[in-house]
Amino acid sequence: MSWKAKRFWQAATAVPCDGGFAVALDGRLVKTPAHTLLAVPTQALAEVIAAEWDAQQGQIRPEAMPATRAANSALDKVAPQFAAVADMLAEYGGSDLLCYRADGPATLVARQAAAWDPLLDWAAAHYGARLTVTAGVVHVAQPAEALAALRAAVHRCTPFELAALHDLVAISGSLILGLAVTEARLTAEEAFALSRIDEHWQNEQWGVDDEAAALEAIKHQALRDAARFYELCR
Image (cartoon, rainbow, N blue to C red; front, side, top):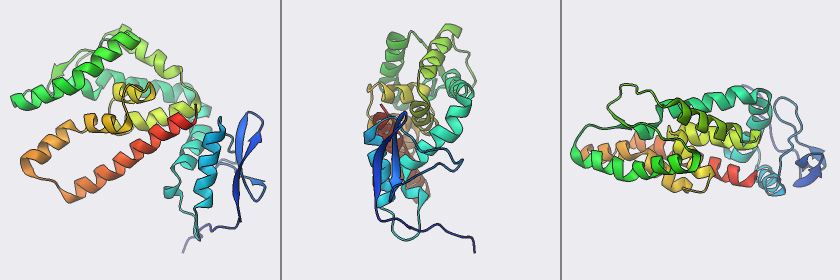
């Protein structure tokens, strides 16, 4: 049986540190899995992380600590390779979910257009990134200037913001939806619903699969957590 970490502290607190705020367990500063000081940019984020540690009883459950995990990722994974992570996320603009439409039935086509066209119009107005829409799954090349504008937007993130954006984009399948959440153009609830139009259409036709619904609920909560983390780190 593998060793499991258990609670050993009485109280977790947010404390000031060089460059931001840290979390202390009975005065002992928390470090990331890579042994970096868990220093975050805002007191609000540090307080949420401290609350996650305080909520642990008995065996430590990392899956119940989304802000802690996101901060660890920002420090250990994103910051050391920021440009590579940002470029990877920017590539979603070349195959964005919102650009690939059904070719039928007409009601689904109309539903996608009504939901997704305003977001593409927003991206064109806000970033100068007008993306091309196509029907079917065959890849369509996007304008180079649009992709460059979206890439610049991604690269403007801090490592903490980028860690959150990574999850927003990966879960939704759309760089536009992820950026719209970071810009407060959409709430997390709205973005998730927009990302699931095809799946919900299928549910209406054939019924809900329990296993798929359970997986969707997990993704939904993960997107909420990412949106909250983004707000907390600003």
